[in-house]
Length: 316
Image (cartoon, rainbow, N blue to C red):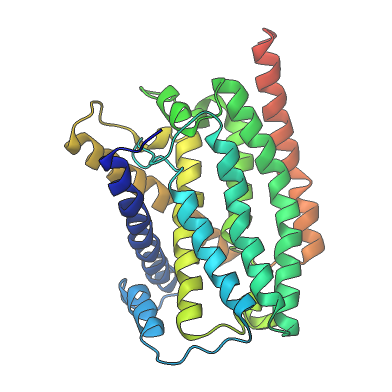
């Protein structure tokens, strides 16, 4: 099926919006963290300045083309992911089963990092990658059950249709599926890599892990990946449980702009909740992190899934 001109335009605009929002979120969180620590902190635009400085460097040394491809895979994965995320109720690519495709795309970036850092030969990089992959084994289990619960509850595997099903007052999934929403939020903390689940980077232990051998333009690419992944992951929670930020009805341009603004604010709120937890918690050991995710979040996700299944057969 041929894509319309609007679709082609949105293919370029959606990643640009995610780029802007991701760096804005990081800039706000740096200022927010500084205030919590009773510091002044850098300006909100500092994140944009840092990326421009990295891309302005003339020399960007890497060990091999495999390391180059790792950074490229990370960016490509998150750019592809944002195309499936409804922003203000509108997704660039939407079809039945797109939530399953998105679940696969979310794994591409970490695997790309594993590919690239494996070529550096730095032991800190290898430790960071192994920690990251083990952490994925922890939070992916409850998150997968959450997705199944949402899909069964709304009888659709399309994120856009899930957002549409939450239109109207008090129809958000966070009210209909509170246990699944709590499990998803706990999984989100690990997906975002914030304490107590920042073991893969752990600057004081393994010197930022996978990123220790990246510099210049390559480090800039990883910063872009990190910024955009915040928008993708926080935005996915907004779409699944907070109605996708759709407040203004109608298909006008102004309604779309208003919904995008609400969606962005809700995604920022979810990000700042994660940052707040990061600022007051210490780092778990890997064993503690896995035990936690295979404990409380998995139990909550299982109970939420059980509630949906029993509701569908008429028990509730």
